[in-house]
Image 1 (cartoon, helix red, strand yellow):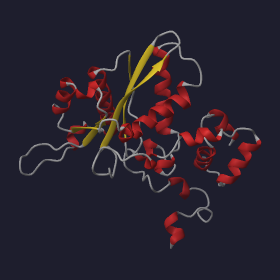
Image 2: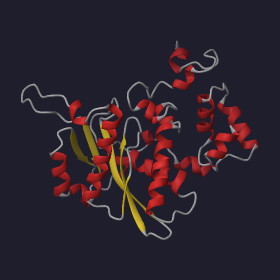
Image 3: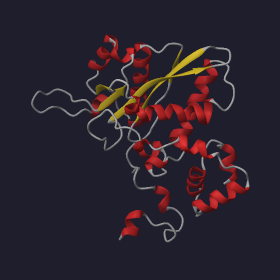
Image 4: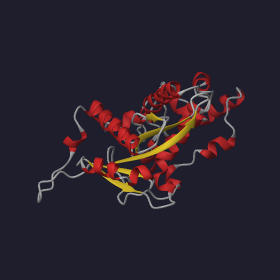
Length: 272
Protein backbone atom coordinates (compact mmCIF):
# COMPACT_ATOMS: atom_id res chain seq x y z
CA UNK A 1 0.00 0.00 0.00
CA UNK A 2 2.72 2.45 0.98
CA UNK A 3 4.73 1.60 -2.13
CA UNK A 4 1.84 2.45 -4.45
CA UNK A 5 0.88 5.56 -2.46
CA UNK A 6 4.42 6.93 -2.63
CA UNK A 7 4.73 6.12 -6.33
CA UNK A 8 1.41 7.84 -7.13
CA UNK A 9 0.91 10.72 -4.67
CA UNK A 10 -2.11 12.07 -6.58
CA UNK A 11 -4.14 8.86 -6.16
CA UNK A 12 -6.81 8.36 -3.51
CA UNK A 13 -7.09 5.37 -1.19
CA UNK A 14 -9.57 3.52 -3.42
CA UNK A 15 -7.16 3.47 -6.35
CA UNK A 16 -4.44 2.25 -4.01
CA UNK A 17 -6.85 -0.45 -2.83
CA UNK A 18 -7.49 -1.48 -6.45
CA UNK A 19 -3.74 -1.65 -7.12
CA UNK A 20 -3.23 -3.85 -4.06
CA UNK A 21 -6.07 -6.11 -5.22
CA UNK A 22 -4.46 -6.32 -8.68
CA UNK A 23 -1.29 -7.41 -6.89
CA UNK A 24 -3.27 -10.33 -5.48
CA UNK A 25 -3.72 -9.19 -1.86
CA UNK A 26 -7.21 -9.62 -0.37
CA UNK A 27 -7.75 -6.48 1.69
CA UNK A 28 -10.65 -4.11 2.34
CA UNK A 29 -10.85 -0.44 1.39
CA UNK A 30 -11.20 0.45 5.07
CA UNK A 31 -7.89 -1.23 5.88
CA UNK A 32 -6.15 0.66 3.09
CA UNK A 33 -7.66 3.94 4.28
CA UNK A 34 -6.56 3.30 7.87
CA UNK A 35 -2.98 2.39 6.95
CA UNK A 36 -2.55 5.32 4.57
CA UNK A 37 -3.99 7.67 7.18
CA UNK A 38 -1.54 6.31 9.77
CA UNK A 39 1.32 6.89 7.32
CA UNK A 40 0.16 10.44 6.53
CA UNK A 41 -0.48 9.57 2.87
CA UNK A 42 -4.16 10.58 2.54
CA UNK A 43 -5.04 13.32 0.06
CA UNK A 44 -6.96 16.42 1.23
CA UNK A 45 -10.74 16.15 0.96
CA UNK A 46 -11.04 18.90 -1.66
CA UNK A 47 -8.81 16.95 -4.04
CA UNK A 48 -11.26 14.05 -4.04
CA UNK A 49 -14.25 16.32 -4.66
CA UNK A 50 -12.53 17.66 -7.74
CA UNK A 51 -12.75 14.21 -9.34
CA UNK A 52 -16.53 13.95 -9.56
CA UNK A 53 -18.03 11.24 -11.70
CA UNK A 54 -18.76 11.82 -15.34
CA UNK A 55 -22.29 10.50 -14.74
CA UNK A 56 -22.99 13.51 -12.54
CA UNK A 57 -22.13 15.94 -15.30
CA UNK A 58 -24.39 17.15 -18.05
CA UNK A 59 -25.60 14.86 -20.78
CA UNK A 60 -23.15 14.20 -23.60
CA UNK A 61 -23.65 15.51 -27.13
CA UNK A 62 -24.45 12.16 -28.76
CA UNK A 63 -28.01 10.87 -28.80
CA UNK A 64 -27.30 7.16 -28.30
CA UNK A 65 -25.23 6.00 -25.34
CA UNK A 66 -22.16 4.09 -26.56
CA UNK A 67 -22.27 0.36 -25.84
CA UNK A 68 -18.62 -0.39 -26.56
CA UNK A 69 -15.24 1.06 -27.52
CA UNK A 70 -14.52 2.97 -30.75
CA UNK A 71 -18.01 4.40 -31.04
CA UNK A 72 -17.42 7.87 -29.58
CA UNK A 73 -14.11 9.71 -29.37
CA UNK A 74 -14.03 13.09 -27.66
CA UNK A 75 -11.48 15.62 -28.98
CA UNK A 76 -10.34 18.98 -27.66
CA UNK A 77 -7.32 21.18 -26.89
CA UNK A 78 -5.72 22.04 -23.55
CA UNK A 79 -3.07 24.68 -22.86
CA UNK A 80 0.04 24.30 -20.73
CA UNK A 81 2.69 26.95 -20.06
CA UNK A 82 6.27 25.72 -19.71
CA UNK A 83 8.90 27.62 -17.71
CA UNK A 84 11.08 28.60 -20.68
CA UNK A 85 9.26 27.55 -23.82
CA UNK A 86 6.03 29.56 -23.73
CA UNK A 87 2.50 28.19 -24.02
CA UNK A 88 1.84 24.87 -25.76
CA UNK A 89 -1.36 23.12 -26.68
CA UNK A 90 -2.13 19.46 -26.34
CA UNK A 91 -4.78 17.78 -28.47
CA UNK A 92 -5.95 14.22 -28.15
CA UNK A 93 -8.84 11.83 -28.73
CA UNK A 94 -10.29 9.98 -25.74
CA UNK A 95 -12.64 7.01 -26.05
CA UNK A 96 -15.81 7.87 -24.14
CA UNK A 97 -16.73 4.26 -23.26
CA UNK A 98 -13.36 2.79 -22.25
CA UNK A 99 -11.63 6.06 -21.15
CA UNK A 100 -8.68 5.02 -23.33
CA UNK A 101 -6.35 7.91 -24.22
CA UNK A 102 -4.97 7.98 -27.74
CA UNK A 103 -1.57 9.70 -28.28
CA UNK A 104 -1.39 13.44 -27.61
CA UNK A 105 -0.40 15.97 -30.26
CA UNK A 106 1.74 18.81 -28.86
CA UNK A 107 2.04 22.07 -30.78
CA UNK A 108 2.45 25.84 -30.21
CA UNK A 109 -0.82 26.28 -32.12
CA UNK A 110 -4.34 24.94 -31.74
CA UNK A 111 -5.78 25.16 -35.24
CA UNK A 112 -7.51 22.83 -37.70
CA UNK A 113 -4.21 21.25 -38.74
CA UNK A 114 -3.47 20.29 -35.14
CA UNK A 115 -6.97 18.88 -34.70
CA UNK A 116 -6.53 16.76 -37.82
CA UNK A 117 -3.12 15.57 -36.63
CA UNK A 118 -4.68 14.43 -33.32
CA UNK A 119 -7.30 12.35 -35.15
CA UNK A 120 -4.66 10.85 -37.43
CA UNK A 121 -2.67 9.82 -34.34
CA UNK A 122 -5.79 8.12 -32.96
CA UNK A 123 -6.45 6.34 -36.26
CA UNK A 124 -2.85 5.09 -36.37
CA UNK A 125 -3.11 3.97 -32.74
CA UNK A 126 -6.31 2.05 -33.54
CA UNK A 127 -4.62 0.30 -36.46
CA UNK A 128 -1.61 -0.65 -34.31
CA UNK A 129 -3.90 -2.10 -31.62
CA UNK A 130 -6.44 -3.94 -33.77
CA UNK A 131 -4.26 -4.85 -36.74
CA UNK A 132 -6.35 -3.15 -39.42
CA UNK A 133 -7.47 0.38 -40.34
CA UNK A 134 -10.66 1.64 -38.72
CA UNK A 135 -12.32 1.99 -42.13
CA UNK A 136 -12.31 -1.81 -42.46
CA UNK A 137 -14.69 -1.99 -39.48
CA UNK A 138 -17.35 0.09 -41.27
CA UNK A 139 -20.67 -1.63 -41.96
CA UNK A 140 -22.14 -1.26 -45.45
CA UNK A 141 -25.51 0.33 -46.13
CA UNK A 142 -27.49 -2.46 -47.86
CA UNK A 143 -29.47 0.03 -49.95
CA UNK A 144 -26.75 2.39 -51.16
CA UNK A 145 -23.65 0.23 -50.76
CA UNK A 146 -21.93 3.11 -48.96
CA UNK A 147 -19.75 2.70 -45.89
CA UNK A 148 -21.39 3.80 -42.65
CA UNK A 149 -19.33 5.65 -40.01
CA UNK A 150 -18.04 3.75 -37.00
CA UNK A 151 -16.72 6.49 -34.71
CA UNK A 152 -18.39 9.78 -33.84
CA UNK A 153 -15.87 12.54 -33.12
CA UNK A 154 -17.33 14.88 -30.48
CA UNK A 155 -15.86 18.40 -30.24
CA UNK A 156 -16.89 21.81 -29.00
CA UNK A 157 -17.69 24.75 -31.28
CA UNK A 158 -14.16 26.14 -31.46
CA UNK A 159 -12.85 27.58 -34.69
CA UNK A 160 -10.64 24.59 -35.59
CA UNK A 161 -13.66 22.28 -35.51
CA UNK A 162 -15.84 24.61 -37.61
CA UNK A 163 -13.23 25.07 -40.32
CA UNK A 164 -13.73 23.87 -43.89
CA UNK A 165 -10.45 21.94 -43.82
CA UNK A 166 -11.48 19.98 -40.71
CA UNK A 167 -14.91 19.12 -42.13
CA UNK A 168 -13.28 18.12 -45.42
CA UNK A 169 -11.00 15.77 -43.54
CA UNK A 170 -14.00 14.15 -41.81
CA UNK A 171 -15.84 13.88 -45.13
CA UNK A 172 -12.86 12.11 -46.68
CA UNK A 173 -12.98 9.44 -43.94
CA UNK A 174 -16.17 7.38 -44.22
CA UNK A 175 -15.37 5.72 -40.90
CA UNK A 176 -15.79 9.05 -39.05
CA UNK A 177 -18.77 11.23 -38.15
CA UNK A 178 -18.45 14.66 -36.50
CA UNK A 179 -20.77 16.12 -33.86
CA UNK A 180 -20.28 19.49 -32.16
CA UNK A 181 -21.63 20.22 -28.69
CA UNK A 182 -24.22 22.91 -28.11
CA UNK A 183 -22.88 26.42 -27.59
CA UNK A 184 -21.77 27.16 -24.01
CA UNK A 185 -22.24 23.54 -22.89
CA UNK A 186 -18.67 22.44 -22.31
CA UNK A 187 -19.91 19.67 -20.00
CA UNK A 188 -21.10 17.78 -23.06
CA UNK A 189 -17.44 17.05 -23.79
CA UNK A 190 -16.85 16.31 -20.13
CA UNK A 191 -14.88 13.08 -20.43
CA UNK A 192 -12.25 14.81 -22.56
CA UNK A 193 -12.07 17.79 -20.19
CA UNK A 194 -11.77 15.51 -17.17
CA UNK A 195 -8.99 13.57 -18.87
CA UNK A 196 -6.95 16.73 -19.41
CA UNK A 197 -7.54 17.76 -15.80
CA UNK A 198 -6.26 14.42 -14.54
CA UNK A 199 -3.21 14.69 -16.79
CA UNK A 200 -2.31 18.06 -15.31
CA UNK A 201 -2.98 17.28 -11.64
CA UNK A 202 -1.39 13.83 -11.64
CA UNK A 203 1.65 14.60 -13.80
CA UNK A 204 2.20 18.07 -15.28
CA UNK A 205 1.61 20.15 -12.13
CA UNK A 206 3.87 18.06 -9.92
CA UNK A 207 7.05 19.92 -10.90
CA UNK A 208 8.39 22.43 -13.41
CA UNK A 209 8.46 21.57 -17.12
CA UNK A 210 10.97 23.56 -19.13
CA UNK A 211 10.03 23.03 -22.77
CA UNK A 212 7.82 21.19 -25.25
CA UNK A 213 10.14 18.19 -25.45
CA UNK A 214 9.82 17.50 -21.74
CA UNK A 215 6.09 18.26 -21.92
CA UNK A 216 5.59 15.67 -24.65
CA UNK A 217 7.63 13.10 -22.72
CA UNK A 218 5.67 13.65 -19.50
CA UNK A 219 2.34 13.50 -21.35
CA UNK A 220 3.26 10.23 -23.06
CA UNK A 221 4.55 8.67 -19.83
CA UNK A 222 1.29 9.62 -18.18
CA UNK A 223 -0.77 8.28 -21.09
CA UNK A 224 0.89 4.87 -20.84
CA UNK A 225 0.38 4.76 -17.07
CA UNK A 226 -3.21 5.96 -17.41
CA UNK A 227 -4.10 3.32 -20.00
CA UNK A 228 -2.14 0.36 -18.67
CA UNK A 229 -1.69 0.79 -14.91
CA UNK A 230 -4.11 3.25 -13.33
CA UNK A 231 -7.38 1.64 -12.08
CA UNK A 232 -10.54 3.56 -13.03
CA UNK A 233 -13.66 3.62 -10.89
CA UNK A 234 -15.83 4.54 -13.92
CA UNK A 235 -14.98 1.18 -15.53
CA UNK A 236 -15.19 -0.87 -12.30
CA UNK A 237 -11.53 -0.45 -11.37
CA UNK A 238 -10.28 -1.98 -14.63
CA UNK A 239 -7.60 -0.36 -16.80
CA UNK A 240 -8.58 1.30 -20.11
CA UNK A 241 -6.26 -0.89 -22.17
CA UNK A 242 -7.90 -3.98 -20.65
CA UNK A 243 -11.36 -2.70 -21.59
CA UNK A 244 -10.67 -0.93 -24.91
CA UNK A 245 -9.80 -3.99 -27.04
CA UNK A 246 -13.05 -5.64 -26.00
CA UNK A 247 -12.41 -8.55 -23.59
CA UNK A 248 -12.73 -6.45 -20.44
CA UNK A 249 -16.21 -5.45 -19.26
CA UNK A 250 -16.36 -2.03 -17.59
CA UNK A 251 -19.25 -2.97 -15.30
CA UNK A 252 -17.75 -6.25 -14.13
CA UNK A 253 -14.57 -5.68 -12.10
CA UNK A 254 -11.93 -8.29 -12.90
CA UNK A 255 -10.22 -7.78 -9.54
CA UNK A 256 -13.26 -9.15 -7.74
CA UNK A 257 -12.45 -12.56 -9.24
CA UNK A 258 -8.90 -12.62 -7.83
CA UNK A 259 -7.92 -13.96 -4.43
CA UNK A 260 -10.56 -15.71 -2.33
CA UNK A 261 -13.94 -15.45 -4.11
CA UNK A 262 -15.74 -16.12 -0.84
CA UNK A 263 -14.53 -12.78 0.51
CA UNK A 264 -15.50 -10.66 -2.51
CA UNK A 265 -18.89 -11.27 -4.07
CA UNK A 266 -20.15 -9.35 -7.06
CA UNK A 267 -23.26 -7.18 -6.80
CA UNK A 268 -25.28 -9.65 -8.88
CA UNK A 269 -24.30 -12.55 -6.60
CA UNK A 270 -25.28 -10.58 -3.50
CA UNK A 271 -28.72 -9.71 -4.89
CA UNK A 272 -29.42 -13.37 -5.61
